[in-house]
Amino acid sequence: MRGILSAIEASRPRSMDDLLDHIANTRAPRLIAGGTDVMVQLEAGGQEEGESFLDLTALASDLRYHRLDEDSLEIGALATFRDTRQRNDIVAAFPLLEASARTIGATQIQTRGTWAGNIANGSPAADGVAALLAYDAEVVLMSRQGRRTTPLCGFFSGYKKMDIGPGEFLAAIRLPRAKPDRLQEFWKVGTRRAQAITKVGLTINWRADGSWRIVGTSLAPFVTRYDGLERLFGQFGDHPGRLDADQQAAAVATAVQADLKPIDDIRSTADYRRRVVINLLCDAASRLHQT
Amino acid sequence: MAEATIRFRVNGRDVAVTAPPFRRLLDVLREDLGLTGSKEGCGEGECGSCSVVINGELVNSCIVPVIQSEGAEITTVEALAETPIGAAVQKAFMEHGGAQCGICTPGMIVAAAWVAEHRAYGSDLRDMLAGNLCRCTGYDLIIASVDAAIASLDIGKSRE
View 1: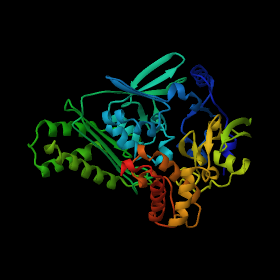
View 2: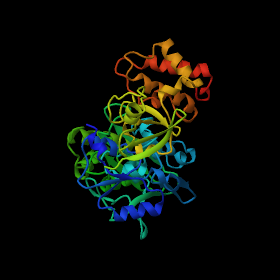
View 3: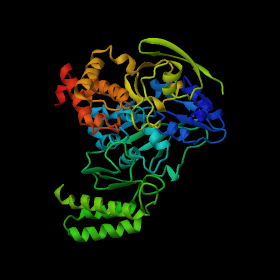
View 4: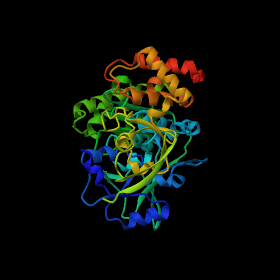
């Protein structure tokens, strides 16, 4: 069972130059940081022909950081969920980061798992990615040619398909700072409270400018923002009291039918997922009049 | 696959092991270094039976490739009884019935000692110990043991 791990080729770059050279010159490089996804996948037999591994963890002095200033937060590729939870200033400025991080595995996973890895693993159930999307995160990609920044929304084009070019790696994540948000919710529906993988996740952020971010987890091939739902909630927010609770619920159900094509998989069914999303959205809508 | 020589410290002792880079730290500890206190439960980072502390952080050694241990300071359950916190946790588990079949116990004790040490930064005990699964008991006796250990050390009370 462990034989596959013994056969794996890996190197551990000691400098950023060394890392970028390795990425540029390796045929099928795969990066490992905390290993909480990679090691489990490898033990389940998930190695591709010819790929070899680059371990990032010797580069902590370059990549394990949070930089919070007046305009933005930058999270380095090796910053872990626990690192973030321990930063009171970041938790205060970006509460959805803490709300999602605390639900990912438990302590032993949060000490190892990274935000960058949560993106790069490309799971539809990535709780951290939902929080990052709710804050308009951008990903910073680095190569020997320099740095490139691209919105996280649009980074994924399919299941585990993302906009990383040859020679590039996901070096950091940037979140713009905004005025305090009006309503923020992170819901994770799983089999149990701890150590569960999300069946349905919904993350909501009503921004100070009146716009909405509504992000679904485990509903599509990748963590997704729902434009139609965001527009609907924009109308709810702009015209409080125009619709009563029943009318809001009906509008939510119609929008969910139009906007969501939930997946059926080992963890849950499409019908159940749609029902839960409607219930959670109705709960959010009912609270708009109170904020 | 070329093996690598990896140097690190375990329980205060310098060691060098020659192993494939992705050999699991758990296997290196148990098979190469004879430290069989850390147990394998699930083997996929869910159950916490293989918990050890690396550079001050609680981790599951079944999903750590040994290459990542280069230069690290590792503490396993074997060394814990010699520390004040570890000794207090061990004693409390005996007094309060915190162990039953024993498979989860080494990992539970490593995690409990780590939680006792870091509690000021965390939230409640059940949350911090959620990564250690026990299939025999409820968790009440385990939590009672950790509570008693923390009380005996007079730490972590600022969160109460």
